[in-house]
Image 1 (spheres, rainbow, N blue to C red):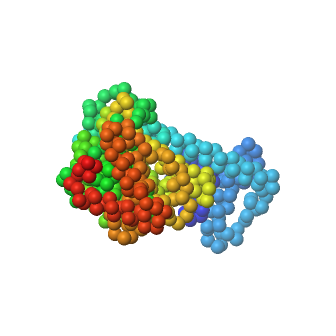
Image 2 (cartoon, rainbow, N blue to C red):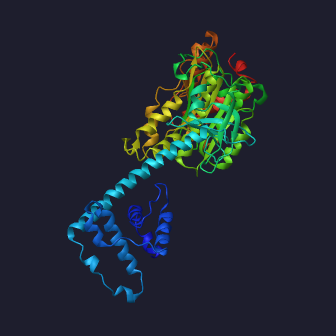
Length: 510
């Protein structure tokens, strides 16, 4: 029998042919192994029973019919002189037996498919049990450290190189996660063993530390259960080491930021939002060394990411470039914000700077494009909800630390998404810093709309005397026709002139 003839048959037919020849293949046998068994039996002189035997045992009609078909195929592969011989056995098969043959073959195929499915499930369970049972491995453990990324099934992977998947990521078993109460983006340190031949990733052997503390079960508070409160103190942005950079001084003057607030930097494209955020990062690192700064820059140009990494001195940078997939943008953003939550749960103050919410919304819109849940104008509901959820994580808490969220938002652009986002984020921020396109085109930096930028809760963390001085300054700057085309530019020029003529904001407000 030729191998090519057998390869055209499915597994059920090959099992029937082998059974008719006197062999019983294992349920785990591969198709090539069954074919080789049939060829060996045929070469050793084994032959299927004749068609007349099938009439003697009606209960085995399906098997003997398959054997008769196998015999016919053997004859079809013989030389031409043998093919002209007697084929009376095949011609004498009644139509009823042919129907029984096809019905039996279909039944056997369904049984084999069910067996294959069950075997795959058992092998998968055994493979998971083998992952957790490491007593068979006696090599040297490998030190591993990274952030935990959990899956819906309960297990997880230790991301050893940033937030995205890697072949060196260590598998973390469900038992370990439940034993220590691990959460997403926990910083773990331990040892791992190499992957065996049935695995794709190494497996975590021992867990030594969780977020810098010894690995032991603890009763940690949940971030969502912490009590949000208003900002209790000012986030200092003005610093003497860089008085030439007036961005931090200007924002500290017209829109003060409190610890644990949500700050929205919004404006049209090419209005300098990224440069404003980088100035804020430098200012926070200089004035607030106890605050952990995390820069999240999504869908950026590679050279811009290099500048961000050079700007951030002691903080963390999580960035993706424009050629990466939407799933990479989404995973990087979620892992970064979850990491900030874990730090707040441990009592630390964190500041997350995001550029931008619009890029994140576009990534969610593409990632959820096949879900079928549409907002309007082909905008998925998750594209609006998930950025709001990320931005809404910013808060000051009464029990533990605080999370200051500073994010940029594009207010114009092609499509309906920027306009929908602008409407959805109205009233969500404590402080809004508005940028102006015309001021940016004229070379004024920072291109801030002084009158439109505002801090709604400044009276909660500033003394009454400073609040009165800031209100007097804003009143003086807002004098004049606000609807004049050059009103924003003229006001900005006046403020920048005052900043350049004074050594500090305190001197300007005297």
